[in-house]
Length: 67
Length: 248
Image (cartoon, rainbow over all chains, first blue to last red):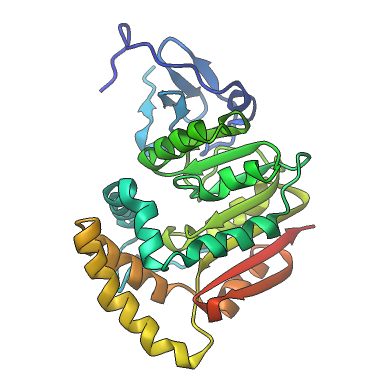
């Protein structure tokens, strides 16, 4: 669905959420990639999308990180 | 922990455990836009009174935060804010329900206190001991692994925090039973067909109410999840009940 690069401008995530959210699988920290509008869990190797300012914290909807 | 069987309840049917979440999501995606109207019809408006009882029990205070699970279109969370409650985390597994909640919060001027996120109550994206209250109203019934939901609720509560579950339960007044049966298995699916154009989804709702643990069984589940001082309050003769427990 969403591609990197020319992603349509997504509204930013609620800053209060950024402070508290963790990865639902590892309960570890998340990095916010504002450009891609994703919350990244390195430990789980998943990027959770933020749609219209609302984070989608479901592993089955997350993008797998490849590296 | 949870039962090891490979199937779980989906209304009166048994379905593979792995399939239930998607099936429940499909039900709510299907009913989202008319969900509030259907709730009014389903309970003859009584769900509003039950929710008011829950809000009062939650005891909103600006010093307390609330995590509302399966918060759907925001009935509990927005009322918490309007009654003076502190920061609100509103979660649901369906983005389409939360979008309606956000719209309502904007219209009612209460958006500032609310943070919205899509999450699974069985695997919360939150650290331990972060909120003072956890509520789930008409949501636990739709979860696959209810034991996991209760464990997660306890995990994210601060010591001294309290959990509340409002859910359909089992009628404790025998005289009510025949009318209630006719209502839920004949009238409801018909309302589902004509109002929401989705009879199957409302049949699921009626059936899932009957397969949900009764007052005593759910109280035991809270105890096993580690909650203390468990209380059960029957509403409308047990058609619904509020279970609560403390994390001490």
